[in-house]
Length: 137
Image 1 (cartoon, rainbow, N blue to C red):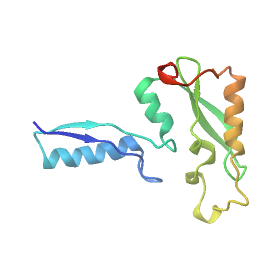
Image 2 (image 1 turned 90 degrees about the horizontal axis):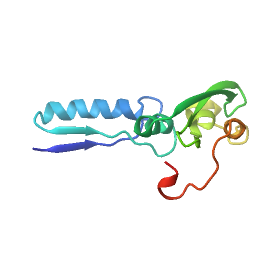
Image 3 (image 1 turned 135 degrees about the vertical axis):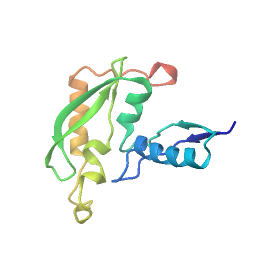
Image 4 (image 1 turned 90 degrees about the vertical axis):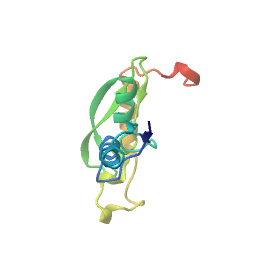
């Protein structure tokens, strides 16, 4: 029996990693109907990271009010893991998907909103211990 592993990241601005995996897996199943298709959404640490980790090991979403790269108020979220650690996806408050292409300007944009997310995590008691080895997850 054939086994196909579909492991893909998101397609910026169009599909989440889990959606992209689903589309690819569906088409692979049509071409290879007897194959076992495994879907493994992945992330490079940008958009979709919280979703991938939440699906893989669980946790609790923590929505907060913060700012986008141009200082506009938005709601973003980070993940609180069972051990108390916080997982912050930078793209949630500092990513290009929050901007229109005409707003791409490194002289006007910032990651201040990501800093607000980090501050909220710290104030909420996020664990800041050793993240080496298996102790992190």
